[in-house]
Amino acid sequence: MKNPPEIPSKILALLRAGKNLLAFSHGVDSTALFYLLDEAGVKFDLVIVDYNVRAQSKDEVDSAQQLAAKFNKQIYVKSVQLGESNFEHEARAARYEFFAEICRERGYENLILAHQFDDKFEWFLMQLGRGAGLSELLGMQELETREDYVIARPLLGVRKCELERFLRERNLRYFTDETNLTPRFKRGRVRANFSEPFLNEYFSGVKKSFEFLATDAQNLSPEISNPATKIYLIKRGVNEIRGVDQACKRLGLVLSSAQRNECARCLENGADCVLGGKVAVGASKNFILVTPYIKAAMDKEFKEACRRLAIPPINRGFLFAEGADLALFEELL
Image (cartoon, rainbow, N blue to C red):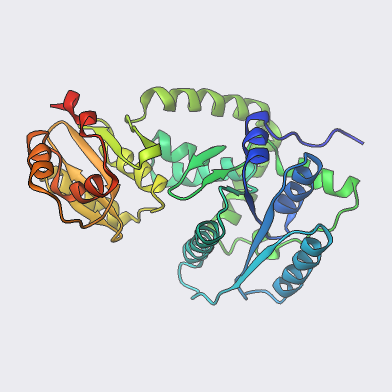
């Protein structure tokens, strides 16, 4: 029996110190991660979404509930009915909305996702086919800070076949979603025709390339500052929309193409905008300011300080409500 897949030490340290929620489907990836986390001594609860498109999904939920009871874990279940058009997008939005809701209401600090290396490469190829920059191509990261929680992906360095081997060797039960094996959805077509055959041949080289690309991304990505205070400053002129997109993700808003286009038009015209009713994007001469959107009655002294520092009006309500230190903007004048 081979050694089990390893979880990176920096992620283990984070998870052992926090309150964790595992996004569970009872497929290969999340089932393997369940047992790997348990063996590593990480405490966590489960969350699962039933999309009601397969008869087997009821068995998956029942089995997940039995597994949670056996290991003395809390489990949160949501049943949704989605339309057939753009199902993948709607399903993703529904589950992340539910995950965020549970994290906020129950105080979970970390949301653990079971994406593995094959998923990362499939995403890369899909973005490449659409036309994307470096940050979009890389997509999934091991750790991502969101507004109310941190996303952790402990398996991004592990291939799916390794997880399958791990489960088979231990005779652990998991389910196979047959829709993932058909060309009905784009991801399935990319997996069957491109990513899986390529990784079977060139896995070690692709893994090394991702490491190089991640280093390049850190050096080339737009500057985003102060995530702890939910205040994001992006320098003008360099990948502005990508910077706004990253900041919005950290504030819990995944932008649609229409929202990105709207934001680009506003920035080009030097105008402020509110995205999704929750994120304020302010346009200044030297910087773009991204914060949560809040309306607040501000005193005259604060307004004058904001005017002097060229802080966009759309962001001032949040800065005032949070008691933000405006000295942050002095060097940007």
